[in-house]
Image (cartoon, rainbow, N blue to C red; front, side):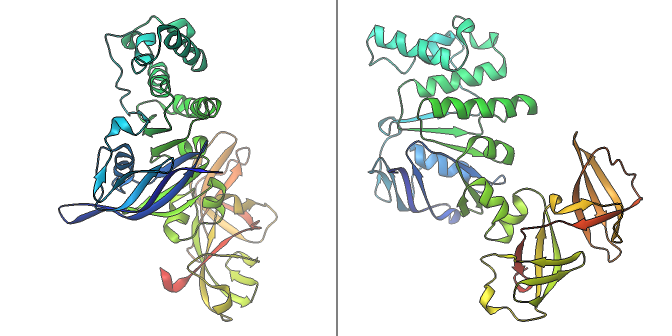
Amino acid sequence: MESLLKLTQIHQSYHQQEIIKHLSLVLKKGEIGCLLGPSGCGKTTVLRCIAGFESISSGEITINGKIVCNADFNLPPEQRRIGMVFQDYALFPHLSVSANIGFGLQQYTKAERTHRINELITTVGLTEASDRYPHELSGGQQQRVALARALAPRPDLLLLDEPFSNLDISLRERLSLEVRDILKDQHTTAILVTHDQTEAFSVADVIGVMHQGEILQWDTAYNLYHHPTNRFVAQFIGQGTFVPGHFISPEKIQIALGIVENPDYSDYFEQSKHTTNEAVDVLLRPDDIVYNEASTLQATVVNKAFRGANILYTLKLSSGQTLLSLIPSHHNHSIGESIGIQLAADHVVVFSREKM
């Protein structure tokens, strides 16, 4: 599939402080990408560089094969065929839903404009609200209007900057799925910026985990969770605990809970270079530890978080090692209670102990 957006070794700094460090990514036509990371990692700055609001000191940005930015050139935002959805929606308060959506369609004929507005009002599910004004809409409805307005001119690329952060959790989760459906229905290539993993997983086809101005891994949600390439990604994505262990054979690692077989070697660890008894760290996810009342391996409940169908338990072994375990909520154990557990990991990631 042909690439629509390509960032090649872009770099940016303010007053000698590096904000983006030689960052590269490729987004294919029709794909939804996401820049995911904690506050201050540079993800919004990358989005602003793509939009043309910020320049870069080195590297290159291309959209549809056309250079829009390098160290010597910065194509104005209005010439990049980019749509943008802001965190605060930025709707025009004096314009109706229809007028907001049609704001960027002055180059269309009246008939074309009306058709496109009606098409998008239907797509975003606001047919009954077309004559209302922003202050008469809920937050979710305002977000749909902002999305429709950005999509109206059929941009080559849509940028979304923390678009759901002002919404409550339940609405955020529902709307993120709706936005993905709308983008796919419109065959829109888009890139989202967020610090929320659930949002990223719901919307994006490919996700870049950012840290200190760099993309540490540009991959699918599945691979970020199951095949993290470094410790930061492993700790940032999902939940998990590093458990010490050592090799007892080329394909077996001994940890406190038992033997792990056929481990997945991270980029920090080369399988061919390990030695017997070499110390390693094994990443265990909450679903790798299961409840078994008949097990001789006991752990003490030190914390619990009710999740509806499941309870996330924080458990402590006799060695002092803590673990997370996701257990069906009909097993409602008290803090301080000892319970039987067993290892049920058919896939774990291994990191070299020396790279802590």
